[in-house]
Amino acid sequence: MNNVTKKWIFLKASSVILIPLMLWFIINLVSIYDKEYQQVMDFFSTQPTKLLFSLLLIFAFFFSNLSISE
Image 1 (cartoon, one colour):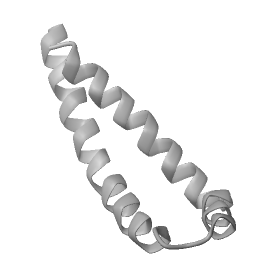
Image 2 (spheres, helix red, strand yellow):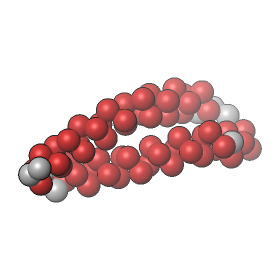
Image 3 (cartoon, rainbow, N blue to C red):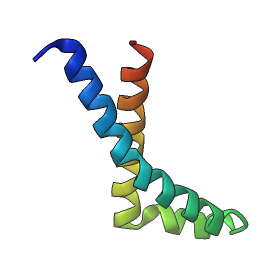
């Protein structure tokens, strides 16, 4: 497989993965926008939030790295 084809496939796959992660983050950001500091820290301390937010950051970095290299 050609390198350009691999990059294109990884770019499309990462964008598909980022869509639900971004929706999850936007919905939760709206819900914690007016909360106190401790409530926000409690939200980011839960295990599913840690995992999903970490995946969001990893895939966003991967997507931006691939898209900038073109």
